[in-house]
Amino acid sequence: MKNRTQYRTETTLNTIEKTCNNAPYIPCKKRGNTLVPVIIALAISALATIAFLTQGANLAMDNKVVVAQNELARIISDWDVAKAAANNDPTGIPAGFITGNNSTYNLAMAYTVAQAPATSGGAPTNATITYQTESAEACNALSIKIPSAWAVISGAPNCNNTATLTVTLQ
Image 1 (cartoon, rainbow, N blue to C red):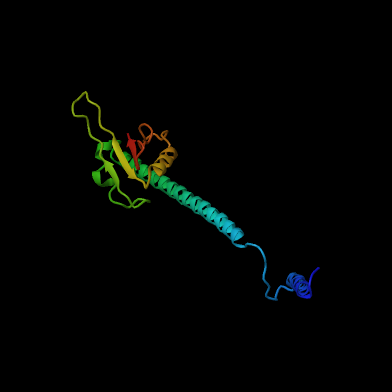
Image 2 (image 1 turned 30 degrees about the vertical axis):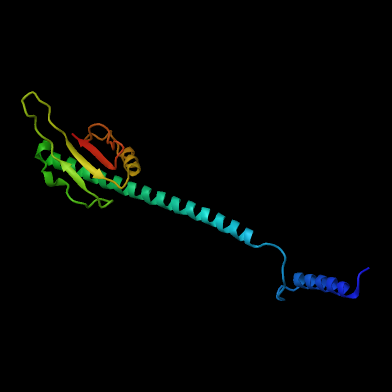
């Protein structure tokens, strides 16, 4: 049989629990662990943040590839116009046609002048444009976007698994 003190304690606890559930502004001692759900929520939030940051980085790289594609198309078009002005002689285009670090990636671009054949029966050396990108992945994406079907491009642009794109012009 319960004594009077035990009965009062149980009754008081039941009353407090009912009061805590019905009145959220009364400070109550809740039973249970709230740390585990908070840790789970933080973990899910961290994973989502990493996914969004990765997606944003990929979008930034894709944007730079498109801008670099347009830049290379303009350079190749300018080279074709300069070649036509030099009576279709690619050796007449000066070495300073492309210089500096003024590319989309703020990395070096270079132009190698076409060379006339050393002997009368020899083959000429084609002009080349080397274009630096920030990664081999960006270079490969850019090389796919430069069509090798253009009349002024000799062969397909390639990266050779580096961050440097080489375009051979004819």
